[in-house]
Amino acid sequence: FFGALRARVYDDEVRKWVSSIGVENIGKKLVNSKEGPPTFEKPAMTLEKLLEYGNMLVQEQENVKRVQLADKYLAEAALGDANEDAIQTGVFY
View 1 (cartoon, rainbow, N blue to C red):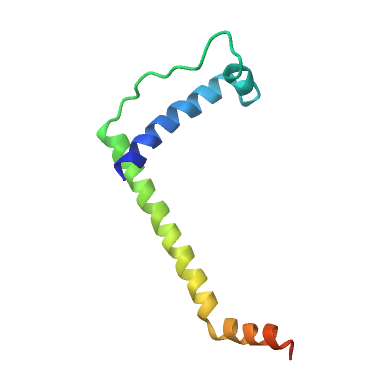
View 2 (cartoon, rainbow, N blue to C red; view 1 turned 90 degrees about the horizontal axis):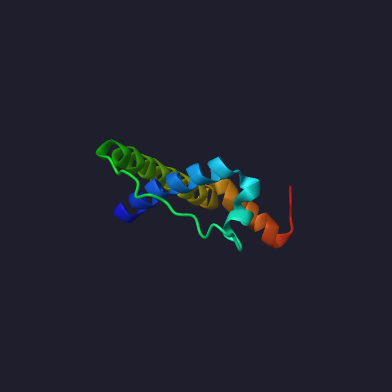
């Protein structure tokens, strides 16, 4: 969890860099660049920023759980089973 929070902060720095040079120039800056590889300053990890990203991660996890629950429901619903039987037997009404 804490590693994911830290990665989010660094992801923001990379997004800022891409925005500043433009997506179309990424290859020129990374491959055989005379300037060398990009460098990034250590980002400030404030408590507010970490809490914001922590809440975002919790929301993403809740979304994943909801999707998994929906998939399980659809797979086990009566109509899902009826459709499975029809598909296996090839008999459709």
